[in-house]
Length: 273
Image 1 (cartoon, rainbow, N blue to C red):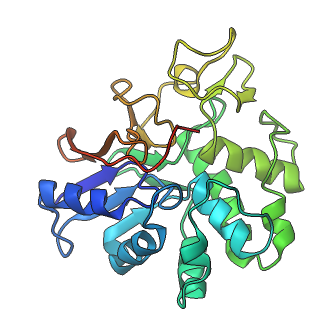
Image 2 (tube, helix red, strand yellow):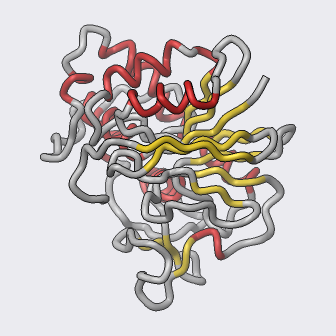
């Protein structure tokens, strides 16, 4: 049995199937961890959701910002964007089952036995892995019971842009979700910046990648979301979004021996966000 972690799919099911063939993935035996953003920008969001859902307990998925955007669209909390490719999901006969399944996915997955924590974007420097998991559970409980558009509307926005234990309600929920699903850069005070999306070295003064701050991590951190990194970061941080939807690569990391596998992808989008 092997466990593979794979970066953002964004509706590129053909690339995932090619990668699974390359690594010899055996669904009854092996496990697949996915860093979120299963959908959007690519052409096969509906087929990707169906495929991953059918893997059952052999697939572990954390929610990404595009997955949450799909849920917000499904609940009428926002309008489609011109670059969205989600209409096939929203008009599918099994739409409700797929959105219900997606809503049950976690925001963070931690496996102390394997020594890995997986999240879509990052963990704020002020949080330990255990704290991040606890805060993720707070939002997950609300998300899974949410039936109103107002809940999903409350997730949109950049403010507050830093953590404070005294935060409550919509603001507390928004900071947690933004850190786990949207963060790339922050400053020494823990303030998140959502404008800078380029590779390290291109950002404004005073900003550094979130993984440059904080205490030593007890587990290795797996994350996606940041396609312009396009490379492993350092010993205990593994960025797995290598820009598949932009025509770069889809990458898997075998957790058992830290070996990387990649396949070349076809480009479906004109530029990274």
